[in-house]
Image (cartoon, rainbow, N blue to C red):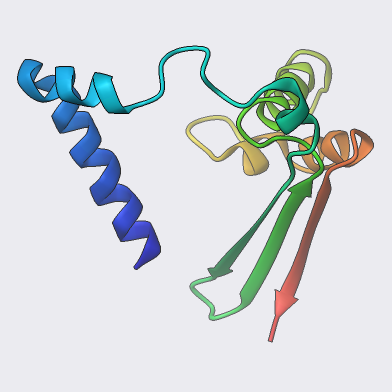
Length: 126
């Protein structure tokens, strides 16, 4: 339900920004560029996400990714930087073609993130 709500909300926002009349209204109520969290708020930011998955064979897994970084700024910068470094410097990465970052970068990205203070744990759920 939450994912569906996010999809609907994001779609409505994109639709609203594509129409000049609603764009001007949204521009008045949405934050302006540079109005994000200040340095103190970012320094005290943190996040934790949990992803649950089920394979076609009915095995269930739970992955938790967490860090004491602001998710919108510092945490994203670390994840992007470490992904780029993994692509540029690490050999024998995942299969070619379209894939998710964790599959494409294999165990390389999770370990790089752990080295930067992130928690990345995958476990089989019961």
